[in-house]
Image (cartoon, rainbow, N blue to C red; front, side):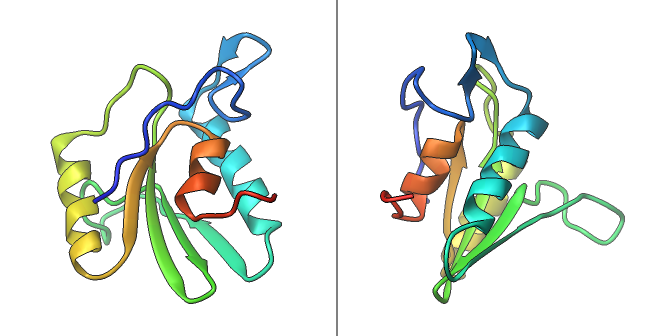
Length: 114
């Protein structure tokens, strides 16, 4: 499993106008940006009685590669169960990580010219 650390205060998703965004706001911004990319689709995974506890927040497929992202706001950490699920998905071949901003999400999927 790869972990993407905090990349700085210039990030679009982590801080906006000097205030720290909520996880839902960061998630929405990541989804908006990634869904605009060519050959990329992102879906928010919602927990319910049919999903596994600790399921990552986002499922992304770009050019045939699968990614799972756990989105956190600055200062928050993924739970042990969330990290366990990311490791399981990584073992199945997905690229996984914890991201704190739109920039980190873009870097995770290797798209630097967006």
